[in-house]
Length: 110
Image 1 (cartoon, rainbow, N blue to C red):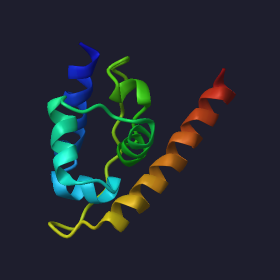
Image 2 (image 1 turned 45 degrees about the vertical axis):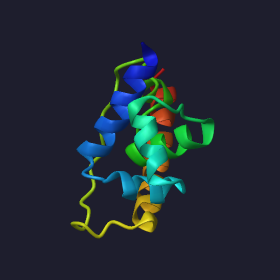
Image 3 (image 1 turned 60 degrees about the vertical axis):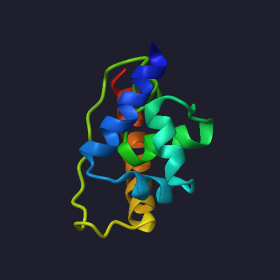
């Protein structure tokens, strides 16, 4: 069950960000066919891919893997049809910082 949630969430995150499978593959450093297989559930995410995907979409591993449903997306304006892997790397870096700040704020509140 969780595997199908994971596939659907990956595809949903990518489509909501208006990224193609090819753009996603370039960012992940994999072949586009692997992205298709991940979204179809014929291949499973490894730890490295999970980390990169969660950084790109600013989601938790638990959300991506279907363990919980808590997700507040961050939005960035992309240049139409010209998104490069370097752009996605920059967005992922900003998202990692934002997730860490959110985590630290939660620690301070508790």
